[in-house]
Length: 184
Image (cartoon, rainbow, N blue to C red):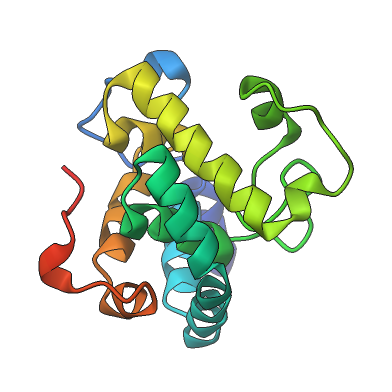
């Protein structure tokens, strides 16, 4: 019986959570399976991870404000995407770099020459993320779809939306809750 109980997590790692939204399937967006979703929720609620992510966001505020203004992406949305990327950063990931967890392909998409260390620079990483969100929003016509495309999973938008309205995040940005327009 114990052996069968061990197979449950393995089985759940293949069962996708079904999303009602299927508009981005042609872009390769997919539903996340149950096991990674549960792991993500555990990581997202870890107080140590959350505190470290907030501390990093505090360092990024000037970059967030500048990139937000330039690319016309709401500050709280940009900060929320960064928060999600910071809190879910994999310790060893050779495909993505920097605080925004972007790859060299995004440099190519934006017509920026690749140079060593550029993606690890926080200011540049935030700028590149804002540019990516603007590029994807222009392509799809929706900031919501841009956020989903950035990550590749339908459930990512819900996490970002929740973070964008997080009081601590808004305080870090020195924004009043009444001023914030929630993602629509």
